[in-house]
Amino acid sequence: MPILAENYGIFNIPGAIERSATGDGIIYCRASGGGPSTPARTNLLIGQKAICKAAMEEGGSRVLWTVGRRKQQCGRLETDQDTLKLAGRLAMEHGAWLCCRDIERLFHPAEYHHKTNCFAPYTEQDFEQLRKIVPLEIPIGLVIPPETPLEQLHGTVIRLGQHRGKLEGRFPGRPRKGSWQQMDLFG
Image 1 (cartoon, rainbow, N blue to C red):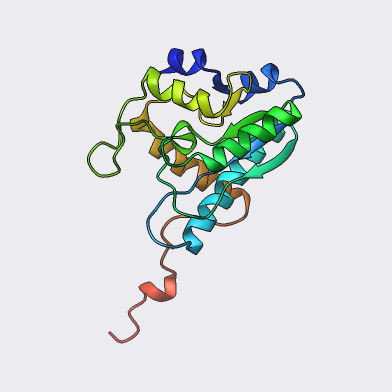
Image 2 (cartoon, rainbow, N blue to C red):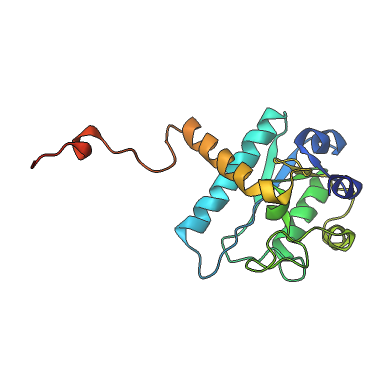
């Protein structure tokens, strides 16, 4: 997939910045999940935005816009095109590049199904369909490099979220039991 992604203008963050006209970027966030908008989905979008913004600032790029929505999205290019089209149009107008957390947050392949085929491989047809929506002149940068295998992507995303939590002063994961909870008060 890395050669395939690079042929269609999908790079890591420094590669996308160097190929853009201005060096400025547009953040694209996509949340999935069934049902109406929930606080968990909102937190997912906020987390994606924070990860992308930190990576862009580290690369010396400026954030122009953040595009995303809280409504349920499956990630397939046949159905979820409106926010991606908006991000592409803004990037084209401003000579910017598009930033996304990882390839799965950008889009899912046509063969993807969340229960039966969650590690569906990306094909040339998937990338061609992406580039019909977002023109090839707009470089796309991913925080998690495109060469990361899909099977490793989930663990990498978890570690990114935990790192972000530690920077904010939170300690993600299960809470530790305090000594007062471990004492036998009645024995």
